[in-house]
Length: 432
Ligand code: GDP
Ligand code: IMO
Ligand code: MG
Image 1: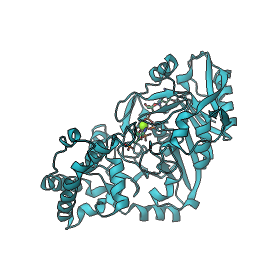
Image 2: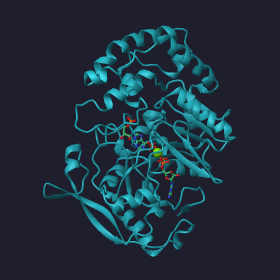
Image 3: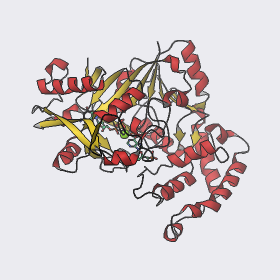
Image 4: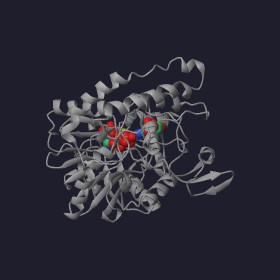
């Protein structure tokens, strides 16, 4: 009776949604605790594919309470769109979705700031955000003065608050543009229109909004099983990732307690989710990135195109230096290796076991992004396997070289592997 966390150990899209859905069966509560509609989590079962952004991937089990905790930033239009799509698919959400009144709200000015600041011109490479207003909303949360929480939507002073914020935002949004050409594209915000729109969203969301943290603390007292669903990946963590090419929340293991309100002592199991290779969307260094036909083959076999923005994901070999760092940071008790089926048919498979930086071999993950951009991966090469494995259900039935690859990963990372995924479906999961 305790909490289990599912944390991505790479740059996101490790297939966290699949494992959360899988583990939900053993839990009474599932919690999303950071990030927002920048996340795109996919769950596939009974031949149907569901894409979730804000709603926990546990939503498909009606007996389980799906919570969105205080650390999440909520775009009301996005979540209502998801609710509508789930209802259309016949998914029961009425009784089991619970949204924190402490969670912060994304407004149109956040998306506009995101557009203006993503490519601010300060660095040569843009962050390549999802454009969902995530960074600016978290910035307002930390800045406090112009922040709005879900609970504020129901307060009588809400319209007045919006009028004041809009006046401020209209004054400084044009100043955020990097040049006159961009400035000319900044449209003034209409406070009354936003008030009307958000008041309607608030009414539609009212049945779901409440004090999630009290509910979770009661669950701790009652010794319930709680599953925590991380969004993004550890290397996108604002404090410990490849800053500034990161997201604006603590997306590594360190963010669990801050985002959910659950005490650290309640967390007993941390499942680190890794792809059998590496992908990244957006800007920033990626030491094992492949710009050749091998990278393209991984992209094609893995359908590596963004769930949220449809951008082609950058693909490369598994980076054990980065994951050793993120799995230690998150206190992973075990690993789940995803998309192993994508690696079938390669003669050889590389694992990056160390970096070379300025002629020296290093095995730690550099804190400075410019150092990380200069490292050269040092590879260990393992023989591949030719068989397709998407029908395999038992570990022993995997090709010998696939098992050797997994065992070598586990050895280098110093963590046991609990799950191996060989396809997107629920049943395509090998439990060890
Ligand atoms: P998340 O953001 O971590 O939840 O991951 P995404 O949903 O963005 O991306 C993972 C993608 O891989 C989704 O399209 C999944 O349906 C798919 N997927 C999950 N597990 C496997 C697997 O083992 N093999 C293959 N081929 N696809 C998988
Ligand atoms: P899931 O939960 C992959 C990336 C963006 C960009 C950077 C900052 O599906 O794994 P943001 O919009 O958050 O300010 O963008 O972070 N990013 C993700 N990459 N998976 C995600 O979520 C991501 N969420 C944000 O591409 O590089
Ligand atoms: Mg995703």
